[in-house]
Structure formats: C-alpha cells, structure tokens
Image (cartoon, rainbow, N blue to C red; front, side):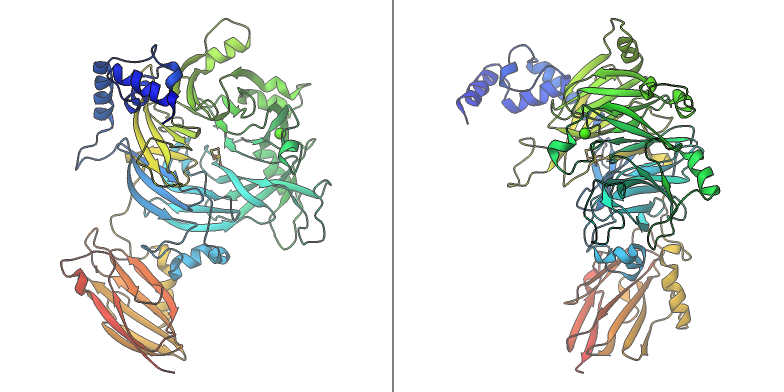
Length: 634
Ligand code: K7E
Ligand code: CUA
Ligand code: CA
C-alpha cells in the first residue's frame, strides 16, 4: 500500500468506514468522486450506508424460486457467445454459443451446428458486440436476436423460442462487421450492419493502396427472414455504430475515420467526422430501377452512397464519434463524441428536408450539441425524456435531460445535466430496460464497465469486467449491483419476460434438425423408434434413441478408418431431461434435449474398445447411461 493509500485507509477507518465501504457507499448515493482526494465531503454516515446497502439488496434480490422481471441478452465479445441473464438478479441463466465452439452443447461439433455455421465453420473464434431483438411496430416481438461478428465479418441470428443460433451469414466484400441494429418499424425486415475497415476492391492482392476511389467500406443490409444480404452501400470514411428510426425510413451510422487514414494520428486529425444517414426507400427504389453494380462473384446489389449521392447524407459531428442511439420518442439520433466531450442530437424530423436539399448546411439538422464529460461512448434512455451516457475517461454515467439540452444549446440558462454517477471503471455500453423500443420503461440500467480493478476477488493478471446494475426508477440513479463478467460483453439488451416465449421441449418438426431427419428418412429410419446401424462403404451411420437412463444402442462395431455418424433422438417427453453423448477419446460431445435429434460425425481412427456415455445429468442412473464402440483394426 502506498503512503497515500495508507493515509486514506486510516481516515476512512477513523470514520468507521473501510476503503471498500467508502467505494460502495459513494457509488450507491452517486456522491462525488471516488478516491482519497475526495474524502470528507462525500462520506455518508455508517447508518446511511447500511440503509442504502439494504435498500439496494432488497431491490435486486430475487428469492430462490422466484423469477426475474427481465431477460437480458449479453454479448460475449471476443469469447463469441451470447449470455442470457436474469435482471435484476443478474444471474446468468444460459449461454448460447454462436461464433465459438461449445463443448457442452456440441456447438461447432454437431452436424446441425456446422450446417448453420456454413463455410465459416472452420473458424473457431468470433467477436460479437451488439445483440438486438427483432421488433414489430417499435416493440420487441421476441422472435429473433441478431448479433455481429467483428472478427470474421458475420451476422448471426438466434431464435429466441429455442435460444439457439439458427443462421449465420458471412458478409461478402467487406471486413469486420461492427455496428448492428434492426429496423424497428413497421417490423424488422432489415438488419443494418456496418463494416468498419476500408479495403481495396477487388481485394485480390493486386492493389494495397487505400487512397483511391477503389478503396472503401460499406453499409450492409440483411434480410432478417432469409438472412441473405439484401444490398450494400459504399460510403466515404468508415463506419462504427448504427441505429434506425421509428418511421422505417432512416438508418444512421457514425464514422470516426472521415480522414480515411491508416494510422492512429491520421484518424484523429479532423475536428469533425460525421454521421451518415441512409435513406432506405430511396435505396430500395434505386435497386428496383437496376441502379446498382455487383462485386466479384457476389450477387448482392452494391450502391454508391458516397457524398453527393441521393441515397445518403453526411452530417459533420465532433470528433471520432462512437455510439449512435435513437431516442425512444423517435425524435433524435444521438451521436456520442468520444474524443469530444459532447453528444450531438440530430432531429429526425428534419431529415426529409435534408434529403430534399432544403438546407445549405447539413448541420441544420443538429438540434443540440452539449457537453457531458470526457469520453462519451454510448447513450440509453428512460422513456421520461432523459438520456444516460457513459463517460469512458471520467468513469461515470451522466444522466441528462434532452429537452433541457436543446434549450441550453439555444442559449437558455438551464441545467441539462441531472446527475453524474461514478461507475467502476471505464464504461463502454450502457443499456436501460426496453430502451430501444417505444416502450422504454425507465426501471433498470446496466453499465458495462471495461475494468473491474479491485471490485472482486483477484483472479490473476486477467481481470473480469464489471457489469453494474443501476436503479433509475427514481429521480436519482442508484448503483445496486456489481456483476463480474468474462470477456467482453460490449453490449446487452433487456426485454420484459412476457416478451420472450420459449418452447419447453422441441417440436419433432423443428427446422433446426430437419436436414438430419431428412437424411434419416432416406435411410428408412424412424428416428423416434429405430435403433439401427447402417453400413455404407466406409461410412457407418448409427441411429439410436435415448430415454433416461439408456441409449437405444449400447454397442456397435466399426472398422478402423470408418467415418461414423451417430444420430440420437431423445424420446423423453419430460421438460429438462436432456441427455448428452460423449465418445471417449474422440473429441465428440453433444446435447440432446427432450424430443431433439442431434448428430455428430467423426473418424474411428484407432482400433480398440471405446466407451460412450451420457454427459448431461439426466437420472439417478445417469452414470450407467453408456455404451461401447468396438473398432476393429483395418
Ligand atoms: Cu462501444 Cu463495439 Cu458497441 Cu464496444 S462498441 S464499447
Ligand atoms: Cu442421459 Cu445423463
Ligand atoms: Ca477522425
């Protein structure tokens, strides 16, 4: 401990508070700054601290057997999955593997998941940032959740009725899908996905120059049902985050590299970069008219949306802007300044005039640009007219009133900043309950802090992050919970629990494993009844049922070098009775939930006897649920 720290600990202890207690108390009341320098003025009494802690506990406490009010979906960042959380308990309910390989469920190992991953199944990593739930009329419809993969330029869809990924699309002609949002109105027909990095076209190794017109990145729009890329729009600069409006007409994206530089210094040169607005009906009309080109082998319509095009408008905003968020009243696109201490509010109802060239200066759509603090990254809303913006450098979340911000921008003497609350530490995204919909309910706010430092038991050089839960239902923000998170939930989304309707057991005709059912039928197999081994040259197909606590086939024989496909149908009808299948020493593992069919293919490359067993605890005799594969030498 340094002298300074020792001193502060002494002072704290003399006031009946530990350093840790001080951190907690200060955070809970939103009082002043954390740290030894701010001692004295902001210390609560011991009683007040105990009272605040008790209140916080009662707010987030979801007793054993009780259910949370909200589903939260957290991105898993460069870990590649989506995590399902209960809010306000912040309990982790489930993990949905998407861009990663998952040993428990067999994601990335089973034939069903490999089919969904398609050509990109060869990649074992992903980097997901932005999970978003499909909407109808500006409200969550609970059908799908979409998420980007920055690492391998993909967009995935999760079916929320089964909480499994059912489609993954690699976006052609671009690198690194980052910002992702959905069309809100009339329904999520389109997924808007920003590609971040500028690349040469064609990118075939003949040209590495990024300065010419044949180097660019694109705004990508995916059909939410088919998951095919509907169109791509060439832009100037690059693209970071995006959001859509509540008319279905506009999407907007931040650009931090208007300089089109390849180095850090260059990307920070300009005082302003921009928000680019996309006019969706005009783009659709241009495609209708055949006003597009294609690139290479891709059939996706590519349109020119560079400055001067009728399809886009470029609005200068300061400086390396990052988050782009639509207020739930549908009035504003709000860009967070990142290298500028400001947020810029763009009036969506002025965009028609902007596109009709009624303004000399595109900055006419800027209705306010106000200072909030250092390093503003993302904004969320309570549905009562307030925005909440994370301040990365200040390690704070700032609550500000949008109407007051506009009045202040117009010269009135109003305080638009309502409160600043310390968060721990360096927050990125923030998300309030139902905030991306017209139903923003102003109850809970999650702040996803990038650094946990000393907030949890130490875990070695690699620390968890810290997802903090803040009660925003009253006038004051109150920090009520710290939740450690593994790398790196950039963003999360919360929906009311009644908005998500899940299946209890699988339907036998579920498309998730329909291909597997089809090929079994071609083998003359009735999956829910038959236990059979079919030999087809050096391919062996083993079909079996599982019913707790036994597999339908408990021994089978193959030849060394055979390609073996094991297809298992769980004929248990009881909710929660999931079986697993692990073939020892073969890298084979998968989940088979009630009424599900799962299959996995491997090579029996070693002669000998190999046990297989059930890996999901299903029965008192779960350990006994096993069988043997005999591999005869070639
Ligand atoms: Cu701010 Cu990828 Cu949404 Cu991270 S991005 S924080
Ligand atoms: Cu079947 Cu454990
Ligand atoms: Ca810049």
